[in-house]
Length: 77
Image (cartoon, rainbow, N blue to C red; front, side, top):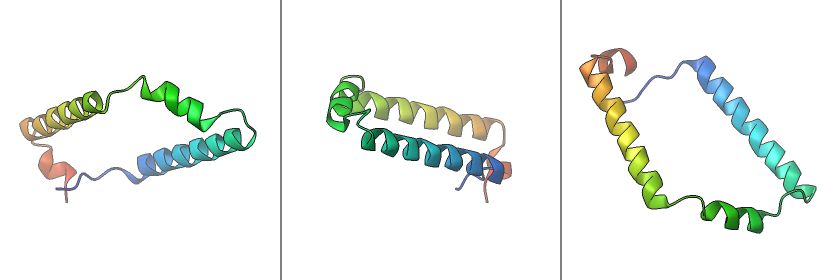
């Protein structure tokens, strides 16, 4: 089951992602960010187990909502 995402939303998300990655690369090249230090700070902020549990919860709630609302026929191809 594939969810159809409007093309405009996909373009906006992709464009923002490309801009963000380009900005991050520039910051690294200009030595504004030290990747190893940034990684050490971020790894203390997240637990992959917690991220996985929250992701599963969101997907479960979304799939249940789609089934309850009958949206699965409208949002899939």
